[in-house]
Length: 333
Ligand code: FES
Ligand SMILES: [Fe+2]
Image 1: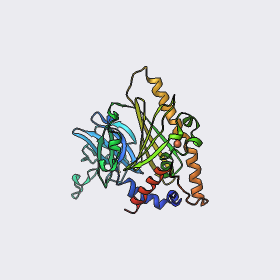
Image 2: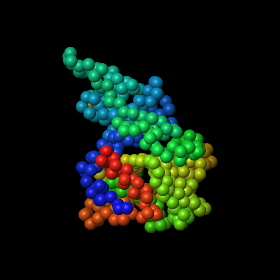
Image 3: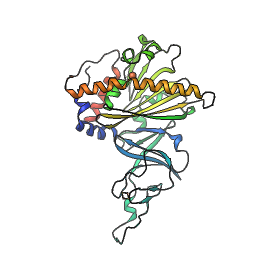
Image 4: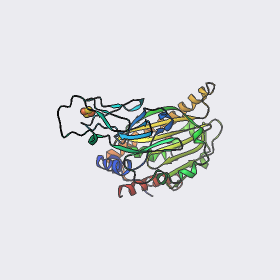
């Protein structure tokens, strides 16, 4: 097994192709469906630079491109909020929550202009076990994309975990460098000494499955994790704690910049448990941040031309091989 050629991490044209072959046609984790509980609640985000939003309309959720049909302005600011209609900030065109164009102010006489021609472009959405996914042009069903994840999580009480916190982290490396890093535990002794001390590293196991990489290690005393970490094709993760979980989406901003969108969920929302929740979130994010420097420096080495693809460990880098294999399959259609 060989690592991917560094050109995959540094070439803007390959990145552009990945946006089409990996991000436009897969289901992307948007966040907890519970954040869209009331009519007008929306989440606006990007899928590899493509702006989208999902909104709760009168009769259920609706997903759209966050792109004005007039001259292309962004309709809703990124993040969550509540709207009664969707008004473009540029020239004030207004759409209903079903995407139909309702008002075009100051337009002038135009016999050829039909309001019905300029509805918002829709995207697909689906809720799976409380998690909201969206897709611009999905090549397969969400269940098919999830593959073995469905049975892996069948006995975990995900629905009993309530959303508590979202955190966005940005770093200067290609999304694939961070993914390669996430799907192996090989770097834990070198990069995460405290985490290393809190698990039985000799028993760390990594296995690749349909649509998923599973990593497990028996936790020692004091580890907030439960010792199971999952990564799902193409770019989301789920880790379990005692009484909760986190999810993340690894979203490229461009070929050398990535955002992580982390969400934390807990079963116990009581005030008494708040210090424990806060500590779990802080400890978890500290481990996440420990990976950034090695990803940045690796990105620089790939950019420099000073690296040729090296070997992958059969014991620890099965996940890296699986991710890279899926990537090459997606690139060749
Ligand atoms: S770009 Fe949106 S109304 Fe003009
Ligand atoms: Fe790490």
